Image 1 (cartoon, rainbow, N blue to C red):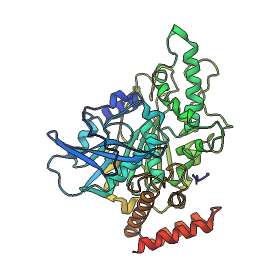
Image 2: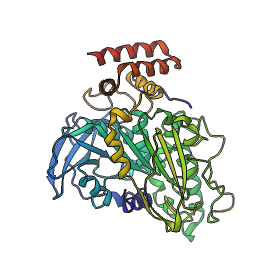
Image 3: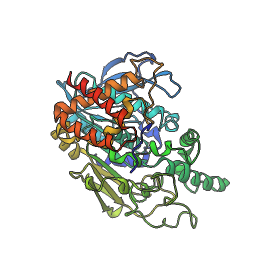
Image 4: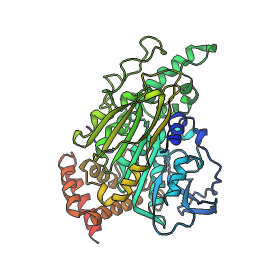
Length: 463
């Protein structure tokens, strides 16, 4: 593996897997606060019966070095007191009518997500949108009434991509669930989506051979335009598959074999069907190639630390899924739900597949352990954090000529890193961090510079 430096309920599962790319299904009616563009977090509160909403404007520095703000909504159960566990749903807004959201509120958990979705956010998935969701998590950690020892991230599809990236880049996440996540940007968008676009365009007035992909493909095309070509090293740096050994708390990935939007090959080759069900033209590319740059021909399962991996296949009987989500004591659990080979008329599942996995027992188990027991000091994660502290991160570029109080500035990144590592030292020990940092630095090309960075961080942790 290459480490990059300068680098539910069943009803909810069905909605998530079948409609998450068509983001209109996830837009709720929460009114956002006015965006100020300032470094201060602005908020407004309202009550909705069984829960209250707080709208928070989150500033961040975009790729042009300018300060932008986007709103998130923080939900708290009515009459809740004390510090609450939090589930953050990245990229797409929470559906307040979803049974799983009602489960969160009934259990006394807080929940948060962006308040809105715009198609342009898909095109900025790996740059401004990634920075914004990191900024949102940063803001929520520091919110009064949130238990920083019990924060989970749950996302699907493009939100699943974001959930994986949050867990690979950050410490302080107790656990995560990624439903149908994009794990390989290059294969999914530059190769597979492009082939589907060509197939749909050639059909003319005969209808779209791959209809769901055809409806949403254009929103993701700006991703391809942001890279210089197939050999651009950022494809790898911004793909979760290349960073999967950086996860430091438990992550569960759920994926269907028939997924026509995020082909399962990028999650596992072992459980992928050799061919489609005959609904694609003969020879159509449904499998990853073997000659992509870097590790981009490898699956998430292949790139994961084998000692920290549990992967299994679960047959889907009668096109319906209704089960508690399996999980393990490993850092990465991959659940492959076998609903048959890819069908061009499908979406994240085969046509007619219903239901989903119930994530609540997993979240309950992780919250009961808390961050103090779920998080580990992982050298690969420490290496990313040390490089970000130097301002050398590819995933989260540092800005030094912008507002130092805003997420995206080098000053805030350094504060965040020291804060999260200090929390780990308080939960476990500084000695564990020291050992992981030493292992990370030993394998790095610029070991002397990283040694100085770690010494600086350690001195601040001890203060």
